[in-house]
Image (cartoon, rainbow, N blue to C red; front, side):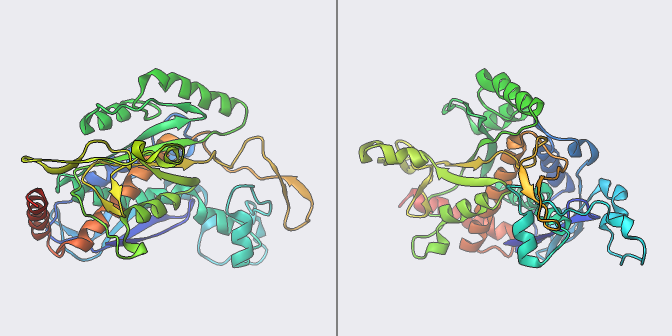
Length: 390
């Protein structure tokens, strides 16, 4: 499985094209739109989320509720484009109509792709950079991940994303929660946390940052349950599943770090407090007594839940902008302001959930026969029984 996305933040639409989704898999438009709605929620979101009502149109690859095995194309229309036709339209600008460039950007914002992208692609108007580098693109990635989550769900594999930390306020681990509880509690929370004791503190921190014209970041966590042991591989670096998940998480806008299980805390502990002892019983076969390594050993799943955290920096678009340099005048200037959020960690946890889901689904379709979904499901079931009796 693979996918590509296209589209600009204020362009006509976002487009996702997926290839490699097995045929004869049930897939409904609502499966995708439910995920898109979740991405738009969360305390701290900006006004753009009040403008857009994200919904995906399945344009190809699905017939009568089942996938065809051919590429699936998904389209998300940008409602705000009607206000940006002159600025973002594809037609050449008529002579003397330079006024249509009234939203030209020559002042790069610290922390964004503006200046680096302009240097790389030779754009004097950095709107050509920021429109594509915008986190608006993550809607297209969530759409792809929603298809992957549909596949995983029908293989009895569930994924949940939620918030572990915002602005230094840390949610306590909730190890006894079931997967269903993780999903339900995070959906009910305005900041998508599982720890009700810190929910209001997180919202207060977001409100304070907004009042100050500032932004705050945090940590999102994704929990994957139901994967059998042995997914991924140790034989080459690019087949290690934890490595691929880590790369996909860092590819999300504003994410700067990834850890599995104990993560960086493992550097401060003895080996006896880090590694997971192996046990066996007749019903389930091999299992780990703990899950400190977050479900991975040697680049492969252990059969324990995958637990992966992603660090999101504060959004760099600030209403009290940092200093920058105008690329036309070369004079110091306050960085330009684009519409933004004071905190997007709750929404980012949804994006991370779907990005991780896609990597897991991709690994499954690579490891097992996947042209037809019924055969894939049978292969997974047979493999689960094989390793249970190993």
